[in-house]
Image (tube, rainbow over all chains, first blue to last red; front, top):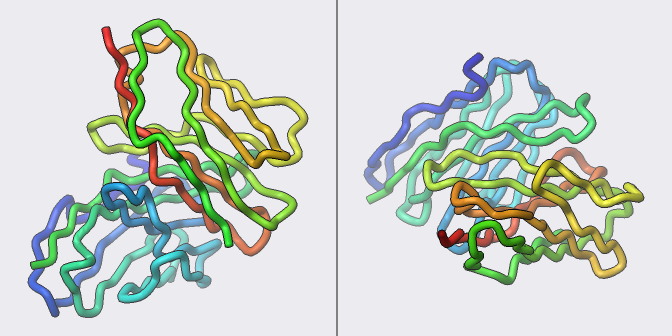
Length: 114
Length: 115
């Protein structure tokens, strides 16, 4: 079982360009999340989705959009990248039917915006 | 507003000793869950332990235990008998049980285990 896959592993992007970070899970989890990790700030929630067809804003949603057309995929789009979006991006999923509803994380995408 | 505070950017512990990583939280929700995750240098995030706000007993999971003091809004992680492989970043997180599954993380504590 792959769990959660993210693509690409890393990317260098010119400022002003758009980019979609891909996230796919094969655990049939209902909830999915996108975080960015920056040194000294921990993980900050960008967007989340409780179930397919619904999304919600996290702590730092500006400049990012998401969609949840099906259970497995949760892409994150940067419409016009800026250098402050340089970060490591983690996708996660969880199953709210489980007692703890703990999150399972992908390996991350390292994005550099120049 | 929800907030998680981890006041120890870095901690050192001698191998085989116990160590406590501090976490305080702020929420107005009466029902919530508290989590600890480990991030080794390889980068993956690993779930360690969970405590529910209404749980009467402190959670334990092998060498990990959670010192939950609800009135103080603290959820400290205790690692007993530290091992070299425990060297990692540790994140405390909270998820209110209302308003969806939004989970807030602290800034993390980097633990160094000395041989």
